[in-house]
Length: 111
Length: 124
Image (cartoon, rainbow over all chains, first blue to last red; front, side, top):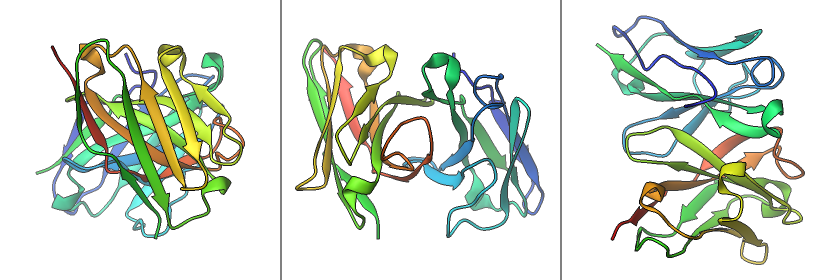
């Protein structure tokens, strides 16, 4: 059972905006920075967001991140068919000896 | 450009060991860490542990302690992960990733570049 809770799936139409939630507790999300990763089918994960809301170079500003308390959110605007992928949140947990923990992943379908 | 190139797929019997390699290029190896993450078929991502590219310090996730050894060879900018006493539920794709901010510890930073993955299949 993943430490961080994500919805198994979300869907939206091209051009629309979608948000993906990541729920944790005081010892993980509330206390530490959150990263988000995109995994296209059959490929390795790719970093989308780090330090809660920062984008690496090359990641379009259609992708955004935020955090409030024990929850984090990934936002994707102007959806494209190429955004269909699995998305994972990640942080570390101070109650687990600071081990890194992932959410269970959310499958995004662009209808 | 930063690249992490992993070794090829492996097929192993239960009880055997496997070593996955991760060759880094395009950056100064000893200023970052390397993490290992695995993904069982159809499942999510699971963090296995961290190694510093600077001094070789490691931390192995509790679940894998006693079965995993992580090493680096700074002369070749390579990292290695050995998993022992393989079981069928170790069948997974194993990824290495560069740990930005992870030169000195695993409880900070993010995983900014990933290898292509190595499929390890365990079956009798």
